[in-house]
Length: 231
Image (tube, rainbow, N blue to C red; front, side, top):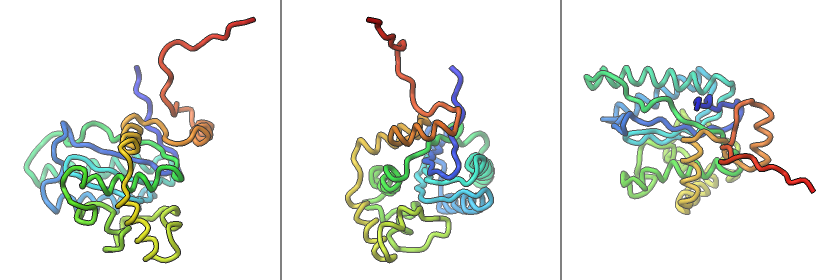
Protein backbone atom coordinates (compact mmCIF):
# COMPACT_ATOMS: atom_id res chain seq x y z
CA UNK A 1 0.00 0.00 0.00
CA UNK A 2 1.39 3.41 -1.00
CA UNK A 3 2.39 5.74 1.78
CA UNK A 4 0.13 8.75 2.19
CA UNK A 5 1.71 12.16 1.59
CA UNK A 6 2.49 14.04 4.78
CA UNK A 7 -0.37 16.27 5.91
CA UNK A 8 0.58 19.95 5.94
CA UNK A 9 -2.05 22.70 6.03
CA UNK A 10 -1.06 26.37 6.41
CA UNK A 11 -2.46 28.40 9.27
CA UNK A 12 -3.14 25.39 11.51
CA UNK A 13 -1.08 23.95 14.39
CA UNK A 14 0.96 20.83 13.63
CA UNK A 15 2.38 18.32 16.08
CA UNK A 16 5.78 17.04 14.88
CA UNK A 17 8.16 14.29 16.02
CA UNK A 18 11.60 13.41 14.67
CA UNK A 19 13.33 10.32 16.05
CA UNK A 20 16.90 9.10 16.00
CA UNK A 21 17.64 6.04 13.88
CA UNK A 22 17.08 2.85 15.91
CA UNK A 23 16.30 5.12 18.90
CA UNK A 24 19.96 6.18 19.02
CA UNK A 25 21.00 9.37 20.77
CA UNK A 26 20.80 12.52 18.69
CA UNK A 27 22.31 14.71 21.41
CA UNK A 28 25.59 13.98 23.19
CA UNK A 29 26.45 17.30 24.83
CA UNK A 30 24.99 20.71 25.64
CA UNK A 31 26.25 22.25 22.40
CA UNK A 32 24.24 19.72 20.41
CA UNK A 33 20.94 20.77 21.96
CA UNK A 34 21.76 24.43 21.47
CA UNK A 35 22.80 23.90 17.86
CA UNK A 36 19.45 22.31 17.02
CA UNK A 37 17.58 25.18 18.70
CA UNK A 38 19.66 27.72 16.77
CA UNK A 39 18.90 25.94 13.50
CA UNK A 40 15.21 25.87 14.35
CA UNK A 41 15.18 29.59 15.12
CA UNK A 42 17.01 30.48 11.90
CA UNK A 43 14.86 28.35 9.63
CA UNK A 44 11.53 29.00 11.36
CA UNK A 45 12.00 32.67 10.54
CA UNK A 46 13.18 31.93 7.00
CA UNK A 47 10.30 29.62 6.13
CA UNK A 48 7.60 31.45 8.11
CA UNK A 49 6.84 28.76 10.66
CA UNK A 50 5.72 29.84 14.14
CA UNK A 51 7.17 27.57 16.84
CA UNK A 52 4.74 27.43 19.77
CA UNK A 53 6.45 24.77 21.89
CA UNK A 54 9.19 22.14 21.83
CA UNK A 55 11.00 19.50 23.84
CA UNK A 56 14.36 17.98 22.94
CA UNK A 57 14.83 14.48 24.33
CA UNK A 58 17.97 12.37 24.05
CA UNK A 59 16.81 10.33 21.05
CA UNK A 60 13.97 12.42 19.59
CA UNK A 61 12.37 15.84 19.64
CA UNK A 62 8.83 17.23 19.46
CA UNK A 63 7.64 20.50 17.94
CA UNK A 64 4.31 22.30 18.01
CA UNK A 65 4.25 24.69 15.07
CA UNK A 66 1.99 26.65 12.72
CA UNK A 67 3.32 27.06 9.16
CA UNK A 68 2.12 30.06 7.19
CA UNK A 69 2.56 28.31 3.84
CA UNK A 70 2.04 24.80 2.57
CA UNK A 71 5.76 24.31 1.99
CA UNK A 72 7.03 26.00 5.15
CA UNK A 73 7.09 23.02 7.49
CA UNK A 74 8.66 20.52 5.04
CA UNK A 75 11.34 23.06 4.10
CA UNK A 76 12.03 23.84 7.75
CA UNK A 77 12.43 20.19 8.70
CA UNK A 78 14.51 19.38 5.61
CA UNK A 79 16.95 22.23 6.23
CA UNK A 80 17.25 21.65 9.97
CA UNK A 81 17.56 17.89 9.51
CA UNK A 82 20.31 18.04 6.90
CA UNK A 83 22.35 20.74 8.60
CA UNK A 84 22.10 19.15 12.03
CA UNK A 85 23.23 15.75 10.73
CA UNK A 86 26.23 17.38 9.07
CA UNK A 87 27.08 19.21 12.29
CA UNK A 88 26.57 16.13 14.47
CA UNK A 89 28.63 13.82 12.27
CA UNK A 90 31.49 16.31 12.01
CA UNK A 91 31.47 17.05 15.72
CA UNK A 92 31.28 13.45 16.89
CA UNK A 93 33.48 11.93 14.15
CA UNK A 94 30.82 9.66 12.72
CA UNK A 95 29.21 8.96 9.35
CA UNK A 96 25.87 7.78 8.11
CA UNK A 97 22.25 8.50 8.88
CA UNK A 98 21.02 9.98 12.14
CA UNK A 99 17.25 10.11 11.67
CA UNK A 100 14.69 7.32 11.69
CA UNK A 101 13.37 8.18 8.24
CA UNK A 102 11.24 11.23 7.61
CA UNK A 103 9.66 13.24 10.40
CA UNK A 104 6.10 12.43 11.47
CA UNK A 105 3.41 15.06 11.93
CA UNK A 106 -0.30 15.75 12.12
CA UNK A 107 -2.69 18.69 12.17
CA UNK A 108 -4.53 19.30 15.44
CA UNK A 109 -7.63 21.20 16.44
CA UNK A 110 -6.18 24.00 18.56
CA UNK A 111 -9.12 24.55 20.90
CA UNK A 112 -9.16 20.90 21.93
CA UNK A 113 -5.55 19.77 21.81
CA UNK A 114 -3.03 22.63 21.68
CA UNK A 115 -2.60 23.29 25.40
CA UNK A 116 -2.72 19.58 26.19
CA UNK A 117 0.01 19.06 23.62
CA UNK A 118 2.21 21.67 25.33
CA UNK A 119 1.72 19.99 28.70
CA UNK A 120 2.52 16.64 27.09
CA UNK A 121 5.84 18.07 25.87
CA UNK A 122 6.78 19.58 29.21
CA UNK A 123 6.08 16.40 31.15
CA UNK A 124 7.97 14.17 28.72
CA UNK A 125 11.30 14.56 30.60
CA UNK A 126 9.54 13.83 33.88
CA UNK A 127 7.92 10.66 32.51
CA UNK A 128 11.32 9.58 31.15
CA UNK A 129 13.10 10.14 34.47
CA UNK A 130 15.29 12.96 33.18
CA UNK A 131 13.86 15.51 35.64
CA UNK A 132 11.81 15.44 38.82
CA UNK A 133 9.64 18.30 37.59
CA UNK A 134 9.17 20.18 34.32
CA UNK A 135 11.08 23.25 35.48
CA UNK A 136 14.24 21.24 36.07
CA UNK A 137 14.65 20.28 32.42
CA UNK A 138 16.48 22.92 30.32
CA UNK A 139 15.59 21.72 26.80
CA UNK A 140 11.89 22.49 26.52
CA UNK A 141 9.73 25.58 26.16
CA UNK A 142 8.40 25.21 29.72
CA UNK A 143 10.80 27.77 31.14
CA UNK A 144 9.49 30.34 28.66
CA UNK A 145 5.84 29.80 29.56
CA UNK A 146 6.52 29.57 33.29
CA UNK A 147 8.36 32.91 33.23
CA UNK A 148 11.86 31.62 34.01
CA UNK A 149 13.36 33.21 30.90
CA UNK A 150 12.40 34.56 27.49
CA UNK A 151 12.96 32.13 24.62
CA UNK A 152 13.20 34.02 21.33
CA UNK A 153 12.38 30.86 19.37
CA UNK A 154 8.85 30.80 20.79
CA UNK A 155 5.80 32.45 19.23
CA UNK A 156 2.92 32.01 21.65
CA UNK A 157 -0.38 30.81 20.20
CA UNK A 158 -3.46 33.01 20.86
CA UNK A 159 -4.82 30.33 23.20
CA UNK A 160 -1.85 30.95 25.50
CA UNK A 161 -2.54 34.67 25.54
CA UNK A 162 -6.11 33.86 26.55
CA UNK A 163 -4.90 32.19 29.78
CA UNK A 164 -4.64 35.55 31.56
CA UNK A 165 -4.62 39.33 31.18
CA UNK A 166 -1.05 39.76 32.42
CA UNK A 167 2.20 37.82 31.91
CA UNK A 168 2.12 36.76 35.57
CA UNK A 169 -1.46 35.47 35.27
CA UNK A 170 -0.64 33.52 32.11
CA UNK A 171 2.49 32.03 33.65
CA UNK A 172 0.62 31.00 36.79
CA UNK A 173 -2.21 29.46 34.80
CA UNK A 174 0.12 27.51 32.56
CA UNK A 175 2.25 26.30 35.47
CA UNK A 176 -0.90 24.98 37.14
CA UNK A 177 -1.90 23.17 33.95
CA UNK A 178 1.45 21.38 33.87
CA UNK A 179 1.11 20.44 37.55
CA UNK A 180 -2.32 18.96 36.80
CA UNK A 181 -0.91 17.01 33.84
CA UNK A 182 -2.85 15.10 31.21
CA UNK A 183 -4.28 11.60 31.21
CA UNK A 184 -2.65 8.49 29.77
CA UNK A 185 -5.44 8.44 27.17
CA UNK A 186 -4.58 11.98 26.05
CA UNK A 187 -0.90 11.08 25.85
CA UNK A 188 -1.63 8.05 23.67
CA UNK A 189 -4.03 10.02 21.48
CA UNK A 190 -1.42 12.68 20.76
CA UNK A 191 1.35 10.14 20.12
CA UNK A 192 -0.76 7.90 17.88
CA UNK A 193 -2.05 10.81 15.80
CA UNK A 194 1.44 12.15 15.22
CA UNK A 195 2.89 8.80 14.20
CA UNK A 196 -0.04 7.90 11.95
CA UNK A 197 -0.52 11.32 10.38
CA UNK A 198 -4.30 11.36 10.86
CA UNK A 199 -5.84 14.75 11.66
CA UNK A 200 -6.72 15.14 15.33
CA UNK A 201 -9.91 16.94 16.26
CA UNK A 202 -13.69 16.83 16.33
CA UNK A 203 -15.70 15.36 13.49
CA UNK A 204 -16.72 18.85 12.36
CA UNK A 205 -13.08 20.00 12.39
CA UNK A 206 -11.94 17.04 10.28
CA UNK A 207 -14.85 17.40 7.85
CA UNK A 208 -14.01 21.06 7.29
CA UNK A 209 -10.34 20.21 6.74
CA UNK A 210 -11.24 17.54 4.22
CA UNK A 211 -12.83 20.20 2.02
CA UNK A 212 -9.39 21.80 1.61
CA UNK A 213 -7.27 18.78 0.77
CA UNK A 214 -7.61 15.64 -1.40
CA UNK A 215 -5.45 13.77 1.10
CA UNK A 216 -7.42 11.38 3.31
CA UNK A 217 -7.48 12.67 6.92
CA UNK A 218 -8.82 9.71 8.89
CA UNK A 219 -8.23 5.99 8.95
CA UNK A 220 -10.62 3.95 6.84
CA UNK A 221 -12.77 1.45 8.62
CA UNK A 222 -11.67 -2.15 8.27
CA UNK A 223 -13.73 -4.61 6.29
CA UNK A 224 -16.10 -4.30 3.39
CA UNK A 225 -18.53 -1.38 3.16
CA UNK A 226 -21.97 -2.19 4.41
CA UNK A 227 -24.82 -2.51 1.94
CA UNK A 228 -28.34 -1.35 2.54
CA UNK A 229 -31.07 -4.01 2.53
CA UNK A 230 -34.04 -2.99 0.41
CA UNK A 231 -37.54 -3.50 1.77
